[in-house]
Image 1: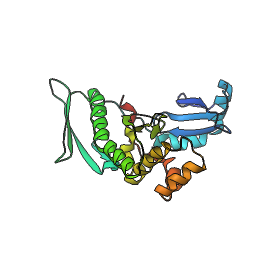
Image 2 (image 1 turned 90 degrees about the vertical axis):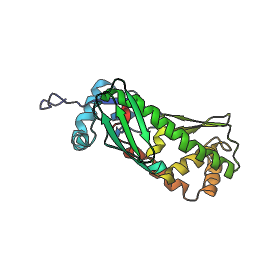
Image 3 (image 1 turned 45 degrees about the horizontal axis):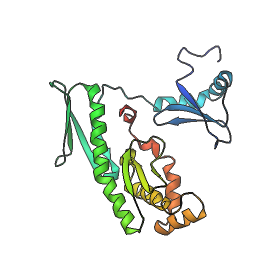
Image 4 (image 1 turned 120 degrees about the vertical axis):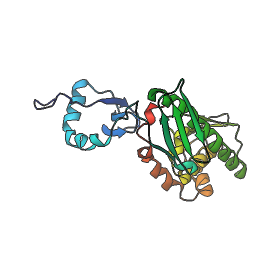
Length: 236
């Protein structure tokens, strides 16, 4: 650490070892914040040196990565995947915490203390994902002749979707914040894994046959985490 470093340096950060990494890299994860990824374990001295070396870049991007206060409710909730924009209303004085959603006006009304909002919102968003995304997945499976054995919604932080060898697909509720075309791609991607449980040439050929330009959408999804709202980590 340099002698002129302020008390709040180094900034909060995490380190992660990845066998796929060819070199050490720094990135801002939408939920974890500043993350250092390396092919092998780093010493504390090496981490400090990396932070100092890339300090200008970190300080330039750090102000853009704010942490959402738990007591602050969002004013709106946009769900591009299902083409909905909800307004949030808060009634602070209430005997018990509850959340009600009116589909006709697309207004979510929360009664209670701000901190109690997040688990209730989690439950409501999960229900939205199950009601709107899973039927779409089953319809695509039927359309493309895929033997889908089951489907669930989870809050996966590292994958948009996954497929098991027994033929079940899990979709991340975070898909709600992607564009419909990107959600369509993720669903077809996982359905194709029912036939090709790998990412080899046969898999991509089958996926491109179902969705021309699939690789372009796949590349775009690598940056899709930037579309997630800042308050998402509060959904425990």
